[in-house]
Each structure stands twice: as structure tokens, then as C-alpha cells.
Image (cartoon, rainbow, N blue to C red; front, side):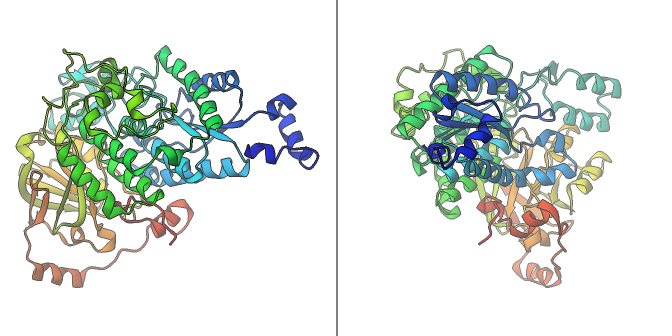
Length: 557
């Protein structure tokens, strides 16, 4: 045990006294010291219940012969940060969280880790920390919140309010109804009830083998969530005793499994960004990773449809069996020999899992999918020479091919103002640039802009193209993650009002109808913008962030 090396007598009596000052006994210090890294706070609903869950994790660790030590780590909420300066910090917080866990685990020579987090950047940050440290580690999400009252033909959620703002602007909803809705879309804590980035990454972490089977989607308020926390505490002790490490679990084949689950469930486009970062951490280059998304996406059927692709929420997927049942349906397409935090392989974990209920509205079989190809598509073209990312599973099939006239905006705020003041009309492609990893900085989500278009009734007649990101809950026609980004002189920086743009999802193409000669002339006049931040964490991130096509990670090399 690492902790034993810094707690042995007589050389390290000082260290033992440090622990004893907090009430630990000689017996406690003779057991494996298990760190509980907790993203809990009172500003993030997805992490709000983690303090309570940590108690149950501790019970499990104690019961299995370990000594738990809990500490807090960074955990931000993309929801609170939507449409304001806070969003600049969200993606950068992923890397900071990984460093945060790394520092605490190494500074105190912990023997194993339980990582508690639920929200968009929390889970990928925790995964990065796990493979970097390569100590016995398990992840525990806090679980999704339940849906709210019915609104616009489905259970409402937090994003219903953004659509409501669009409806208010269009005159189809009054202020009193919107404010009443505000009280009823989120009945309790948890990660957002739709299939956004938070729940997508929890599901992918389960598919990777880093979350106990079924634990990704147990709703936050269910008693089963507490029982899962206890089991997680027990499981980490088994991993410590057997020396099963994250790099034994998070392998290239395991990442393939996670990408397959992302596509089969129509998960968030941000899953691409985070898997690129995770692949990089274990030594898989971005081109190889992108080729995986290409090939796996084409050969993986879409067998799950939930909000934003359908009216059903993640709670409905949970009740139909959750990720274990999805993996059971996909078993022949998965690598069954991958190790997991149960100490068993994927195949062994699936041995007693039943297939989806015959009456399931959200899970279909591989033989009868919602679509023959997956929910995520990589696009390329003269507007996205490296890549762009879209989500056909959340886009109406009538919009899978769309041509329109560019309306160009150099920030999210400019675009949102234009939409809410009715300056966008049918046939427009809204281009939002200088919102990439460097340009934002931090690659903000264009969530509100898309929702405003939906609320304004323009979802079937307009599109958004951006070097920023989208929330997993976005629908309408969109392409994000455009690389190279505008701040690095990518072609998106050269688009002008009136240019024609074609999005062709079936052919994975994004084309700007401007000849090369004209683009070259525009490039000569382009001036690189000055850095927006010169100090603080965003100043560091803006300076060292990689392209979205490389995961948007901090790269000091």
C-alpha cells in the first residue's frame, strides 16, 4: 500500500499524528486509505446529493476493510453557466478537475479512489484523472433528476424554459405561463432529466467499465442510488485487493465500446470531445480516434431514442433496464473481454441481463433499430477541413440535407440578440464563430441560440454552424466543433453574410459555396484577434488549448 510507506513508524510518526488529529485510530491507519473525491456543492443540482451518497460509500469501504477519506474537488454546472461568461469556464474545468484529483491523490499517497460526480465536465475530468493516476478507481454518478410537468407534448425539463423564451418572443406563450413553468420543470436534484452531456458521459463511463452496471441512470432521488453507493464502496476494496487498475479497464477496445454506446443511444456530441481527450491520455492520437467515430458510427444502429430525440426521458430508459440492457442488445458488437470495476468482464456482467421489454418505447433491438447508423456523425468539407460534429438522431430527417444563406455573428450573444429580435428568417444558416477552445475561450455551448430557434418555430427552416459546442439536449439542424476554429484562422473565420452553405449529413459534408480564390483573398485580410484573457485560468487555457478535433485539452508540449 502506498499509504503504508508514509505511515510506518518511527520515521513517519509525524504523518500518523496528522491523521490522528482528525480522529483516525491506529486501526484505521493500518488499512488501505481510500480517497473519496467529491464534486458536491450547493450550486450544482447534479452534484447536490453527492454529500449524502458519500456517506454510503464510506459505509461500504468500512464494511470491506478500508479507511475512507473524503475531499472536495471542482465541479461546475453547465446549466447555470448557459448564455453567460460562466460557460467560458466549463470545458476548461474538465482539465482542472483532473489536475485537482491528481494533486490530492499524489500529495497524500492514497491507495485507491472513489470519484463522485455527475455533470457535463465532471465525469470526463474524473476519467482523465483515473487513467493518469492509474490507482484502483471507481466512479459513482449522482443520478438524473426526474422530469417536470408536461409541456409542448412531453415531460418538461430545464431546457423547456429556453424554448419557452423563443415562444415568448414569437408571441405563442405569455410571461405568466413561462414563469409558472419555471417552478415545475425541475422537481428535484440530479443531472438534467434529458439525455444531455451529463447523462451521456455517465452512460459512457458505465460502458467503459468504470461505473457499476446499471448505476449510471438510477434517478438521484431513488433509494437504489444509496444502495449503489454502498456497493461502490465495497467494490473499490475489491479493486485494491486485486490491484485492478484504470488502465486495465480503460483500453482502446473499451473506448470502442463506449463510442458504440454513444452512437446506439444518440448521446451528446460532447461525447466526441471527451473521448478524444481520454484517448489522448492513454496514447491514442486524434486521427485514430476520429476514424473510430467514423467507422463505429456507420456500423452501429441507433436503438435508443430519448429526449431530445423523443419525448421520453432518461428515467424511462432506466425503467426499461438502462445501459446493461442496451449493452445486452448490442452484445455481438461489443468487445466482451474488457475488464470492468466489478472485477469481471463485460461479457460476464451481461450474462444474466435480460433483453429489452417487448413493450419498450425507448429501446429497440439491433434487428429493428430506429436507424441503421448511429446518433453521431463526423462531417468534413471546405468549411470544416479537420472535422465538424453533428447529431442526426436529434435532427428531423427533413433537415439532414439543408442549404441556406449565412448570417454571421462573432459571438453567442450577438446571435441570440438577432434571434430574439426576429432578425433570423427561414432559409438562414446562423454562423456563430470565435467560440472555439481558444476563441471563446473555453468553447461555449450554443444551446440557447438553438433552443430560441426551436421556440420561434424555425427548427425546420434554419440551421446553426459554429466552432463552439452544443448541449446534448439540442435539436434542430446544427453542426458544431468546427475545426480549425475561427481564432486559428479556419475557414469559418472567412464566411460572410450572404454566402451559401450546405449541410449534408448523409454524405457527411459541410460545404461553403465560395471558390478558393475568393477565400484566399479573404484570408489575406483576416487579422488574428487579440487574446481575450491574459491572466487567470482562462488566460492559461486560451494559450495552451488544443483544437476541438484534438479534444480541447491543455497541451504544454
